[in-house]
Image (cartoon, rainbow, N blue to C red; front, side, top):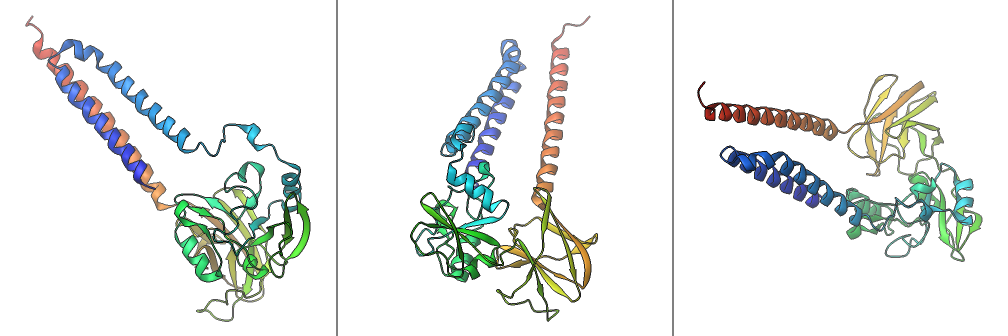
Length: 326
């Protein structure tokens, strides 16, 4: 997934080197010196156009610029009404590609406001695919195409990941332990009892973690923004808070304003130890790579400004040296 960013960087550096070489030659060629600003602007426009065309072609299968493509059907509208903000999983656990043929195509569920337990993302961790199959013994989707569409075989598996509803092909049996809700087009919708986005699980040990499927109490999760979550807990004994939030590097947590250590849960989600009493837990997403990227971007801008200043100063000196004496 880093091939194209590297290629873009190489092309950009090559273009910059070529312009720098032309700039040096322009000191002895007045005509070339006059055309250099237009040549620089033209190069920048050409690079930007090529990059834009590449991105449009690469994303052609998801026509996000055409709103008419996302007119909801009656089945989609019903699913929106029933599921609300709950997480919706896919059935067909016995198929090699999981629930790829069910629900909405990964990521096209976003315009409909349906939270689907599936994604297409080339930077998704490979652990999503390997760990899912190892833990749940069903297909995780198509790892070669980065399509994560795991099949939900039972209510137990669904509760692990906070999946409140599961779609299954009409006529096929739903996940074991699930409750049939209604038919949606050519699919059936099942409800998962006890599923929640966050749960408090009693902790009997200060070192070990509760078992994978230890029962817990559901607690609401507030999302003030896309990169921040807030949970309020209240318990008379020590608990483990299990959050159905992707365990990507960059999540930081506080409890009552103090740092809170986060630990992966089932390799894909997060959990933390919570002491007795009432507490406010806040999660914020800010990877270190963001900070490094900003620093590099600022340094690059400063370097370009300095380079432009030096080039301008050399040009002035060169002109002065060629000017006839007064």
